[in-house]
Length: 276
Image 1 (tube, rainbow, N blue to C red):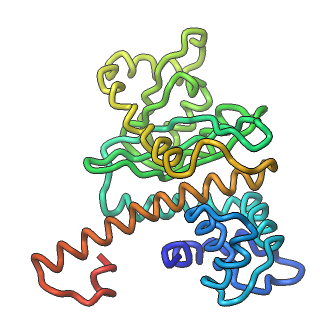
Image 2 (image 1 turned 120 degrees about the horizontal axis):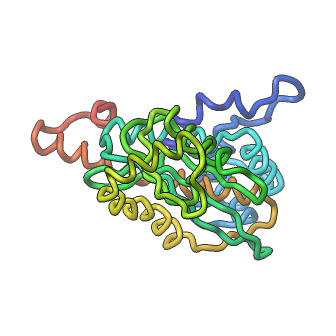
Image 3 (image 1 turned 180 degrees about the horizontal axis):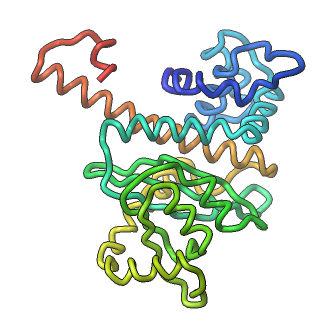
């Protein structure tokens, strides 16, 4: 909860409308309820009866929580929070290369949505830094543009992302795109350059499956089917689960730093240890 409240403070302006009635509570608290609700796998009714009391100290109707689920998707706040937590982890762990991959998630009405996740691969762990939930009709370039935060070094992508515009976006974002060639696509300046690079670095591409471990962690913990029908709430709950996963990684990092300081430096006040 503290991580979400701290990180989301700079993105409240994306949600609050310039006109009209102001929210009756701090928007950060609504964001915390939405994320924690997914982390503990509670329904809207249970979040109303239990979680709202624990976070806000008062009852928040389930319809209000559901409204903010849809509103957060519209504003893109949760995606920005995930990127911010990813940058914090990156500042502590760095990374060797990145992977942009996708998977399909089934909704309650048996429709599939595509989850695109950008993951950083470090020596010790894999952590998400960007995500986007897409539906039928969206182009590959639009999916890459929304799921890919700025970065550097190699970016490995499978043949689904073998699009001239998508490769151009990845290169302009700062990466060196390493894309597996698609058998039926061969036109475009950036695609030809990508094929030359793949011919040189094809051996490195075998490390791409490490980036898929994020999907395995999410599916093992939360399952592979969403209990939602609406597109906006489906996307919000998926990204909220990724935020909870990234926050858990950040908590482990902070705990390891604190234990290291206690062992080799001596007892340090908690607030000083967490600023490293």
